[in-house]
Amino acid sequence: MQDGKYVILCVDDDEDLLLCLQTVLEANGYLVATAKTGEEGLRRYKAVQPDLIILDLMMEEVDTGTSFVKELRALGNTAPIYMLSSVGDNLTMTTDYAALGLAGVLQKPIDNDQLLAILAARLKPTAAQR
Image (cartoon, rainbow, N blue to C red; front, side, top):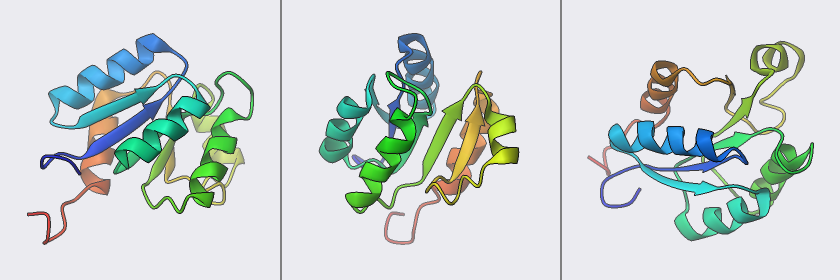
């Protein structure tokens, strides 16, 4: 949390999607950090210490998303991670996303109302933050 706002890190190689996420999230009171690669995402993660991470499953390489999650685990990440996928519903049915270290899977294209509801539920302020 910075300046009383939750920080969301969005990592995706699709610049248009990053801009859409940033626009929606900032309009709803979140601070947003973006990255277009897994490597850049790790640097941004270390710099901003986000409260929640939204991560594309497939970026520059097929396993970039899952490799990124493993790197975060090694760094001791405690922020919820939501994976973006164009196969979202199918991925949820065939994969134990919790075993991958994910809080959930979001289907592309993203439903903004669903996204905001998830963030509101996951990022409830603690007594110390109020």
